[in-house]
Amino acid sequence: MKNLLLSVGLLGASLAAAAQPTPRQLYPGLFEAVQLQRVYPDGKTFVDALPTAAPAGIVATYEQRRSRPDFDLKLFVGQYFTPPVAATDLYHSNIQAGIRAHLDTLWTVLSRPAALQPPPNSSLLPLPRPYVVPGGRFREMYYWDSYFTMLGLRAAGRTALVRDMVADFASLVDRYGHIPNGTRTYYLTRSQPPFFALMVQLLAQAEGGSSQSYTQFRPQLLKEYAYWTADGASPKPGTAQRLAVRMPGGELLSRYWDDSDQPREESYREDVEAAKTSAQPPAEFYRNVRAAAASGWDFSTRWFAPGQGLGTIRTTRLVPVDLNCLLLTLEQTLELAARQAGDSLEAPRFRQLARVRAAAIRRYCWDEQAGFYSDYDLDTRRPTPARTLAAVFPLAFGVATPVQAVLVAGHLRREFLRPGGLLTTPLASGQQWDAPNAWAPLEYLAILGLNRTQQTALADTVAARWVRVNVRGFQQTGKLLEKYNVEATGPAAGGGGEYALQDGFGWTNGVLLTLLDAARTDKYIGDRPAQPLPVLRPKNKVVKPAQ
Image (tube, rainbow, N blue to C red):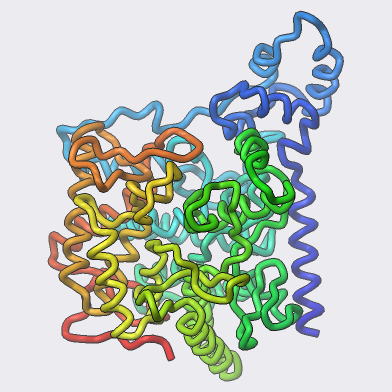
C-alpha cells in the first residue's frame, strides 16, 4: 500500500508538471529559431519574456510570415514579446552609505510579492507567499540559493519572510512532488541540492522554542525524501534508476537527475552546440548536462572525464558526496520531526536510515589513498580523482571522522586557499565552477565544516578572506556578485560560464551578513547534526560524526 500511494503521488506530480506547458511547447518552431539564431544574447531572456498575444496566434502568424523574403525574426519577436527587466538593473547603490546599508536595502530590491496568478502564458510558477530572488537574470525563486538568502534574512531579523519562503517551498512540494530548480515551467523536470530540511531547521531556530515547524512541514519533508529515494526498491546492487542508486553493498544513495533528455530551454543554443563536441548520443549528453544543472554546479570539471571538457560530462554516473550529506540531514530532520510529533515508529526508522547513509558516504566517497572526500564513480567503482570543495560537506554534516577532517583541512590549506578564500576546484577550465572562482554557499559550508571539526584557525582565515573579497568588490563596483575571483588581488569579479556575471546577489548577501555578524560578536557556526545550525562556534567541544 505504501509503494502504491507513493507511485500515485509521483504520477500526480508528473501530471501537474505536464499540465503547465514550457516555452518550447508553447511556441514550436519559433522557439528553436529564436534560440538558435540568438535573437537575445542570453537564451534565458526569451523563456522569461511575456507574449503580447495568445501563443497559438503568435505561432500561426510566424508560420505565415517566416518564408517571406523581408521577414525579420528579431523584429517579429520584438513585436510579440516583452523581455524581462531585472530589478537590480534599475537599482543604484550608495557605496558611501556602507555595505550594511547596502545589504539592508537589497532585501527590499530583491523581494517579490506573492503571485497566486502569474501573467497569462508566463513561464513563472505561482507562489502563495512573498519571496526573494537572487538578482540579475535570476528573476524567480531558486531552490538552494534560497537557504543562504534565508541566513541573511534571519540575521536581519526578517523571520516573517523566512517563514513565507519556507511555506512557498512547501507549496511547490505539494503541487509537483518535489522542489524544482527554480520557479519556472522549464525547471520542473529537475530539482536542486535538497536544502528544504535546513530551511525548516533555520525557521525553527529563528522562531525559538515555541516553533512547531518540524511538525507543520513534516508532510513536505516526507515528500521531498520520497522524491530522492522513491526508485530505491528497484535497482539491483551496483545499478541506478532515476535519482536512486543501489550501491555494491546494497546501501541506498542518490544522484543528480533530470527527467528530460532534451536541450535546456534556457540554454538551448549552448546545449545544441556543445552536443556536437560530445561522443555521447545527444539524449545522453543532454541528460548529463541537465543533471549538472540540478547539482547547482553548472559547470565544473567535477563532472567531466579527467583532463577533458564539457563534451565528456558524465554527471549521472557519479554518486555525489554533497547530495548524500544533504539527504543525511534530511533523514535526521525527519527523525526530529517524528519525535516532535510523538511518532515512536518513524523516529527510530529515520535514525537508522541516517546511520546507514553516513556509513555509506564514508565507505564509498572517502579516498583513503588521497585523504580526501570525492564523488563515487559507478563505472570505476571508486572515488573520482577530482578535487572539489564538495569535500567540505562531510565535515559540515557530521560524516567525517576527526582524522579525515584533519586530512581534508590539509588539502584545503595547500591546494584551495587563495587570497580571497577557497577555490571551488584547483583547476582552471573556463567553467564557472572551477578556478579561479569561489561561491558563497561553498565558502559558508567550508567555514561551518572546519569549525565543527575543530579546524578553527583555517575556518577563521577563510571567513576573513571571503569577507574581504566581498567588501573589496563592493567598494570597486557598488555591487555584491554571484561569484568572485579569489586568486585576484585587483578586481574581485569572477567570470567564465555561459552568461555574464550577475549582481544582486541573494546568497552572497546572506552569507556575508552572517559572517559580518559573527565577526562582530566573535561567533561562528557549529553545533550537532540534525539540529538547527546556529551562528555559534562550539567551545571546547568536538562534534562526533554520525554513526
